[in-house]
Length: 330
Ligand code: DAH
Image (cartoon, rainbow, N blue to C red):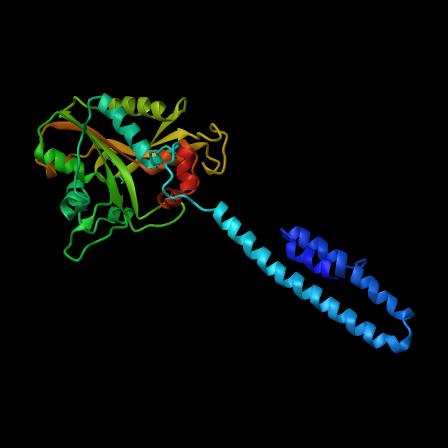
């Protein structure tokens, strides 16, 4: 028995120890075989034989259990050393940074219009009623104010609901000719698959002397722009209403997913609405003290463009900072 105890004691791995357990206590193990001999032992010797055998069995069992604890501890310590993370190690293959799809789309659009000599203008995010509504031909209690769910502050300022107020600020501070875009953040009380309370728009305004600017100019600029952004798509102008333009239109492109056949994204219509536009309303010119001018304007949602270009299904995913989404834009 001594030699078994020695073997157990010298076992250098859990595997060796397990083999020893099988060889001693297993079904065909040496100790198990001894128990089988009980039948043939004369009854007067049985008691002593059994006592001796049980003692052997418990000694071997204890030895194996004790050794197991030691070997398991050793294995754990070895694993901890092997798995240790060296936080001082320098990473020679850093993962490249990437632009957020909204920033990337915004830059593309700004670049396009800068190349056409449009100036980039800015305005405050906290606006007042005059710039955000009144001067844009949206008087108080006008039903068209309901088109935009506004965040109001206690002091009657508000978070701008669109980038159109930058039109007003630019006309109030500059002389014609004006050719500007206003990219920026806007806010509305809205939250679902296609709306977030914060999003981005790009506004455009072109103003010059009366009769110099027409709907035809607007149409040409927009068709060229949409081809630049979406490739070979059909573009259509659909009569619509905006308080600050007359006439007004909404602009659709043929669906970039089904090429106009009709699918889930375009609600089977074959068309996707991408922006609003029109000829500047006379009342807007009056509000900023312009006389004898003509102009056009348009406004678009940057997230909408980014979603259509990159085939992103849920607008909200753009603002969750999930690296699994962002990693796809490297
Ligand atoms: N401000 C409008 C909106 O937020 C977008 C817009 C439509 C701007 C037509 C314009 C325009 O300048 O002419 O929904």
